[in-house]
Length: 104
Image 1 (tube, rainbow, N blue to C red):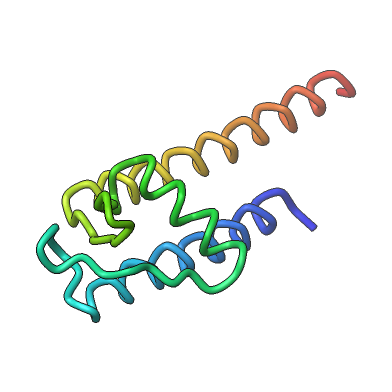
Image 2 (image 1 turned 180 degrees about the vertical axis):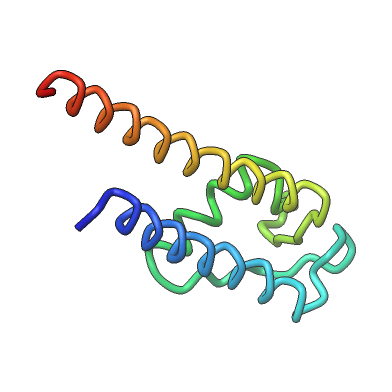
């Protein structure tokens, strides 16, 4: 399996999970502090990603433990995730090029 194939699958899973969390909050109307709702992540992956989104500020948490989606920060979070994946792909490409140069 190629590095790009693996990173595509990881990106797809992370993207789907991130979008699922955002969609669920939007559907519940949780787009401001006043409309915050209790988050109910489903599974370990959603729990982990929700924690990352809260730490980044894409999802805000009230002192009562309710959550809401900060749309502006969510866009920044999406961009940061893409930049991170592209960085890993570039790094893998440089490593492959170095290996080819060393053997050639």
